[in-house]
Image 1: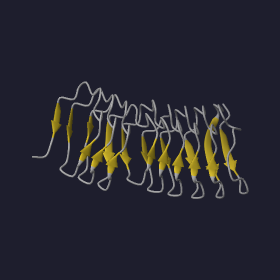
Image 2: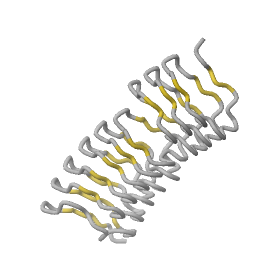
Image 3: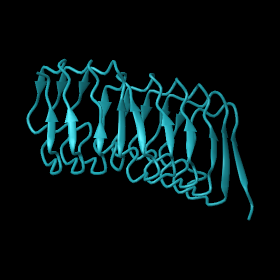
Image 4: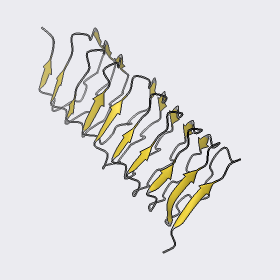
Length: 212
């Protein structure tokens, strides 16, 4: 089969849907100057294994790498501020580092990306969509995280363990709702408020360790 390498040249500020569902696209080079990876740009590119994202990119659009099942790792540069909904949904991503520049993550970004088992959550992220972490078994929270926001881990049915850092002062409503495989959680002494329904529908939760 023909292996395609896409090179988006200087002068183009955003990608398009030229390669959507292209099963023969193997590698993508985005030239500096591109600011937006537009929605659906590489959706369904099941043979895509490599993409180079330049420091000029600030937005990864909705569905951008959805169903890219051969894409196992990606380097997100510290210029990106927004990752759109379903951006890596059903992808082959195994590991990903989200930089401090990211402040917004849309709905179901990693939904059904079953190869991704662990992710690190940074305090710089101010807005989370729903079902962002659906399917993850382990989530690492940075030590300077201030709050576990509303519905942050809602419906993370595969989540088995999570460590809440001592910087957290509040656990908001529905934060862990529907985490049906979560069995135990330790609440640090720094936590001042636990909102309504924070652990609603956590059917396997047998032990909550509270500070003495």
